[in-house]
Image (cartoon, rainbow, N blue to C red; front, top):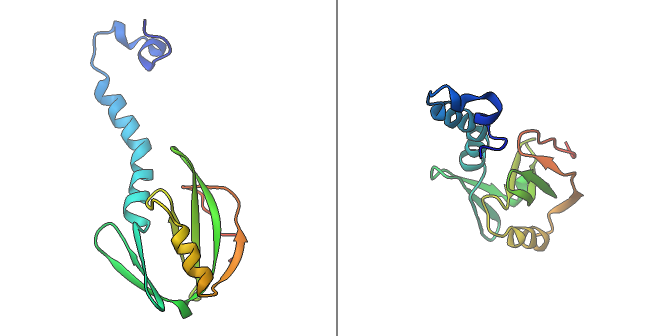
Length: 139
């Protein structure tokens, strides 16, 4: 029984052609942008030092963010294909943002505790967002 698969809906199983590569490419085009953004553009680790946060990215790129460069932070939730994940956005004084999510981190609570101990301003919670349409509430 084929059920409601694309093969049954479009009658592709009767033609005897191999449409597997078509569906593989179609699914790949849908999932690739999300995977690319999550793996390559979002931080995968943060080392918390005395007066700076060392942000590490997948390709071995490190970025030092001094505490005096951080204007504030906010907590948020991000909706993904895998469910709802907790996140933190660092608002920098130069107008840029750094997003941390539990997609790439196992637990972001040490980062939140570090920012609270260092008395970085907390803007409060942001609305639930999706990975492809992030809007920053406190710009």
